Amino acid sequence: MDLYFSGHAHLYSRTYPTYQNNPTQFNFTNPTSTVHVVAGGAGNREGLQKLSSNPPSWFAGGLDTQYRHGIMQVWNNTALTWSYYRSDTNQLYDTFTLVKDQHP
Image (tube, rainbow, N blue to C red; front, side, top):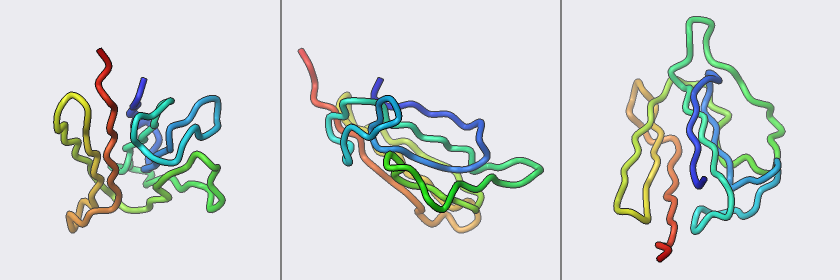
C-alpha cells in the first residue's frame, strides 16, 4: 500500500514512507513502503491534539494546532498531490506529490 489516510486523532500529521516504524526513504517518488496521513484537523469539541515537539525520524509534517481541511488531486494513474489548508484563511499549510511508476 502506497498511501493510507485516517482521521481519528484530532490533529494533522504525515509520515515519510515507513515500514516497521522506520523511514524507508525521505521522498515520495516510487515509495517502497506506506505514507501515512492523519487528516483530523477538523478537531472536536475538546479541541485539537498536539504532537510531541521531538518527532520520530519518519515524521514528515504536522505539529498542527489550527483547524484545516485537505484536497487530493489525482493527476493520472501514477501521480497524486495532497494539499492541506488552513480552514479560516485557505492558506496552504502542507503539500506533497506521490509518484509511482507504472508496472506492467
